[in-house]
Image (cartoon, rainbow, N blue to C red):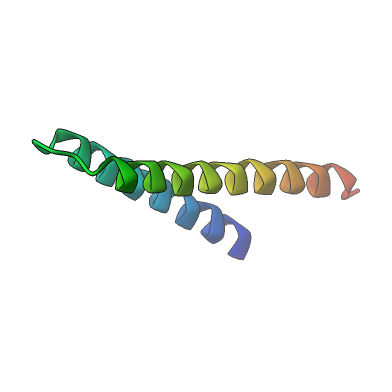
Length: 64
């Protein structure tokens, strides 16, 4: 199902951003601006996943 693929994509992107944040944080002089930007992107993905899940749940419950 295409929507499941989309959720999988969002999950992979969320994990990729988490890894980038972790790697940048471990550097001797981490780029705090980059980390903040990555965290905002990660939060946006999380919001999209939450929105998709609630939309999907409501459409499933409406189906007879």
